Image (cartoon, rainbow, N blue to C red):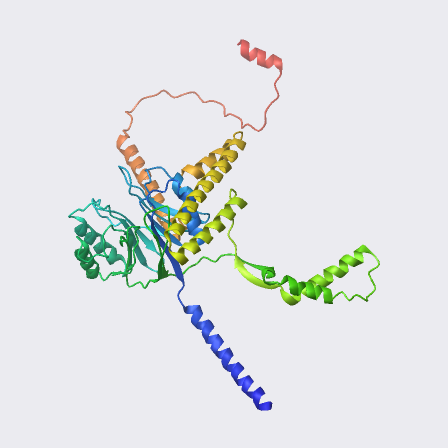
Length: 469
């Protein structure tokens, strides 16, 4: 027995050492952030579902192509952006269709890059600077073939790759990379190879079975690539992870619960019956009966389904989110799991129809909520205009405070004041001419004016005399 105790102590020490080493390794291990790429085929009437997609999958960056956003129209993007998220959008300047946008958590530092390139005629792009010195490019290329596409893409990648060796290139390229002999595919893959970009998608991303949406990276390992069905578009939603430091820490809460669904009613009945012996004296009052029954039920449940405490993260539901919508969402998840399990067309159609109904229900609930809010605040212009601004205007993303930025503003302000002072002095000096000499007669001496030390009171006769004379 002593030997067993000694071995247990040694083993315990080793376990503690391994645990500490594991903690050290986990502390330095890089965290991953989830990206999602989706061709929306218009955000109109899909914004609530897009918001649900972000929250359900805890997406940090959602990269959208074909938003069909019109310039100065931010309503659909505002509705698609959950709380604590913001976006960078680039609508097509003219015509219909196109448009790209990136929705991301506010806790992540993202800056749009100006690559100083001439306007591209064959594709739309959005260049971003992400944490961990990563340059990301979201691109949408219309399906129409253009001979200048590869040259313009080469020019873009040349500038982007010079900013950082970690490059992420993603978007809808409308190139059938699943068909090696199709037009443009060999030259496009050769161009990617010249910039040491690896194309990671090896599964269909379009409803017709082709691979059109691509994820490419250089010196940036990607993991957990997968696709989700998105019935409201003919493109799948692509999810992947990249090693990035995440400063976001969600609020954790501890909850306690019992696994009641695992309680066998027959066993519970037997426990209650055994706890009530027939020959025991009955309680003297109804209150005693209630106390006894409560004690017996608690003991029985504790033996079959004891309390468990876990730590979970909660998200705040929108004010317009009702219990009926939550039930519809649960039904949608059941249909999604059934479709993923069977891959039958009938289940896919059922899931698609349910998502459409869920989208309509979300739009109706949001419309009713904002209609009620606007009607109730028609006598309060401040709240009314704030609500309308939230719906129609982009969020105010104030730049972060910076000592260099403050010093630069102070230097510019001092220079401006100095320039104004110099110009005024020069103007006065150039316009000043000495007056001609004049001869004046000497004035008689006047007695000095006594200093004013106090006000003398006046009466009506003095005021009348002043007015009269």
